Amino acid sequence: MPRAELDALRWRRLRATLERTYASSAFYRARMQRAGVTPDDIRTPEDFRRRVPTVDKLDVLADQRERPPFGSVVAVPDALVEYCFLTSGTSGKGQEVHAYTAADVAESLTSWAASLHWAGVMPGDTAYHMVPIGVTAGPVTLLSAFQQYGLRTFAVGNMEGEARLEMMQRFPPHFFSTGPVYLRRLTTICREQGIDPRRAFPALKAIKLGSFGFDVPWAQEMEEFWGAKLIDTYASTQCGGGIASTCEHGTYLPDGQRGMMHFPEHKVYAEVLNPETGEPAREDEEGEVILTAFGREAMPILRFRTDDKVIFKSHRQCACGRPFDGIEAGTVSRYDTMLKIRGMNLWPEAIDAIVLAHPEVDEYNGRLGVAENGREVARVLIEFKVGAPSDAAHRARVLGELRSKIKENTGVGMEISEARPGEIERFAYKEKRWKDQRRQQL
Ligand SMILES: [Zn+2]
Image 1 (cartoon, protein in one colour):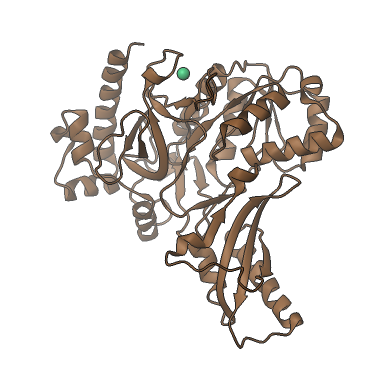
Image 2 (tube, protein in one colour; image 1 turned 60 degrees about the horizontal axis):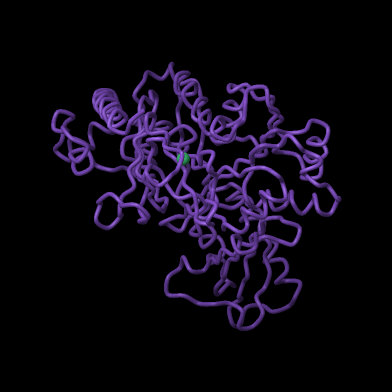
């Protein structure tokens, strides 16, 4: 489809989404009324960008707190809400509730089809889904999407790495889906056990990654070791699933430059804007992703600020010739302080609230890394106050209490230890307390 034709289609869908959302979602109607704008005022994409207000996670949470559980954003009668998911951030900012109608679920099932097709994955292929299934939308809709596409899917997210590899040797995969840190872990186990994926899994075509940055030499090493192409993807619970994916040209180009992920722009209206000026990012410029989904029934999404920091790529920058713009592969990060640990969203404020509230703790530092065995680890180093009881048994008990409390409140297990003298760094900005070394340690 030529770009001009795609633009015309997008504009028609955007207009329809705007009108339907204004008519059926009290939340969005009130926001637009406060901004003094109605759908009739929006005559060009520029009007849309300049006049329709953006919305963020805190707006949605405040609305849902006021009118639990779904908020006034819901645009369908309650009986039509068939599925309900929660976001994974259990503390720090709060947990959003996401409502889906049957049609929303059906739509999200197709959200990964292009990505699979571009990677050469075919119906009938054997796939492994390696993310634990829970109450968040991503893993559930991804699994359903694989099944809907016709993949024979093994959901092994709750198995240990060794057991997964054993399964994969019994039922050799054409494709599997995991994250960069876990791929490193599987690679480590393969090396320990003398498994050569090129021989053990000769039909493997592609490995889907997502939501985590990586460097090109790492991607080259993984493709060489596994004998398969890496697919990088970008997803959003708010939009009901897959938002962007690399095409057959992959995550990097022959000259070592990074590749791009294309937005399926017939399904989603993705803006990449400079957060200071609000103007669209140009090719290779940094910006924030603002999402509007076409055709979401239960919970429309209109100009949702993701806080995701990306590098914009135009469709002209990919050799595949598709008309879809997108973002650079392997470099999605955050504007806010949110950390993603083993697939869970976590705000440092949640840890601050637990650790710094303890009367004997003076300061702490957090470190995210990848251990020798390829496991993702979160370490918290504690500095006790001068004058706090110093006997070892007492301090060990305090550390144990903090460990349990963090696990209980955030769902993330962390290693907690007392810092050596001088080990703790102090910062004017609290977000610096956390140092993420995972990408370097992949
Ligand atoms: Zn392409």
